[in-house]
Image (cartoon, rainbow, N blue to C red; front, side):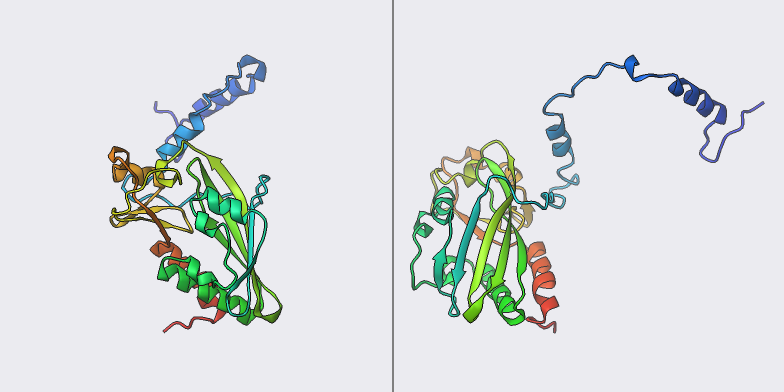
Length: 257
């Protein structure tokens, strides 16, 4: 005679027997063994992509400010001229390969610090929104170091006389093996095509793909080159769409056609 089975094809008597065995097991019957320290890294690496060259969505950092205390602040006046910088500005500029930004120029507008039109225009629209609505806006950013992945939160706040204050605080930092492409001390081939890196998600452009920096280094075989290409910071298409939809279109500053 065949045994009765449930809808899933499982014999209930087998389930009952397993249940009785489990009920008799005590935690003292087991030895607690710590997993290998790199087990989680191996798991993350195994699910970092969807099996194709295109990576999955970037990991979201915890929504809390890092205890490292890295905060970069600056303010612009009603004409968008940089009128003051806060703590960590100079040190942050030097550490990220931009010594020319370590000393601000009093008559220089904020927009002269951008080297790509698409990013400059996006931030100009964002500032327009903050001034028009008199509401604070928070923007997530990536600004990785050679030795760490770093997530920041930029707070853009309206002030009197059309001034706008920017406060960029480190939210989360994750150590990794150093990446020469992001090392400000690496020798650069200034004649090479710059690698475009998205300022929002931290990925770099390789052909038609946006890849995590470590994947991009492998895909472009940069470690085989005697020097690294320059880096240009921009924004990828998905991040630009998200920023436009969430921060600009919803405010009415930009009208959909």
